[in-house]
Length: 324
Image 1 (cartoon, rainbow, N blue to C red):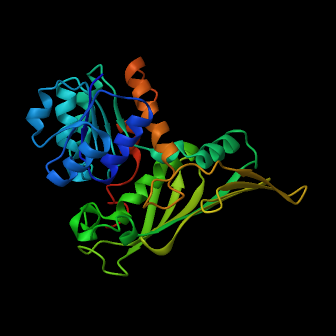
Image 2: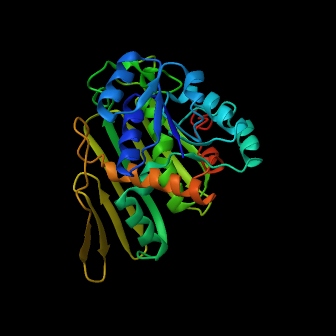
Image 3: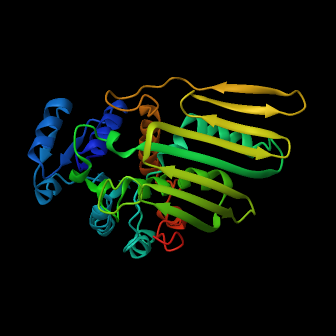
């Protein structure tokens, strides 16, 4: 099946790497920027287009949509109306999404929203442990996801791409990115409240810290801290249960389970994985490849068992609850 990669920024190039790793060969790409097209042609050896209509003449059957979040909808709607399968990067923009979902539900195509961390080996391990009731009744968890916004794309100023805009700010984007895997493990959210702040004035009045209190429908109460001011990147998760503790340290590449009876930790170490040059070594390519493989399998088998836009819509990213 012919694949059209839409957008050739950082994520667009990553998706091309994913497709190449999966031995997909029938790929074309579209981006308005000449420098990006030239780079991709040289690096990946594929045909690129500066004009969307010209790319469509190649009759692609799949869209991979990797443009800024506030541009997703137009390509999603086009794909849905024209019976083209599509995969979209994570987004905090919800305008028009319900209408698109209604259109998609009447079509025999696969539309999938990104939920990359569900494919991380540690996250899969945590889900398995929770599903097996490894630490008994769940009491609470705290989770800190911290990064430094200017480190995301060190080759360009943050004012040159969407993370510096209030509607699509970097920290605002990460909150639902993290919630997509947390809801996979702990279920739907009943309510959220938050304290947010702009501490370093890095963009267009964007907030750079979010302290989020979450109540899940199961009754579990938890705390999520997301920031883009941390000069050292963190993902540190601690889940307390009646019969033990589950702890994930992203930087140590391990999940630990504490047994109060033996007073010992059982450690599950992750494979080191492969990181692309220029990125944090903990951002492994394998989880992105596995996510893309999952999408392509869903397309080939016409399966609906994947992270859907209905699932995505349940994530509270309208931020009316978070008073942004």
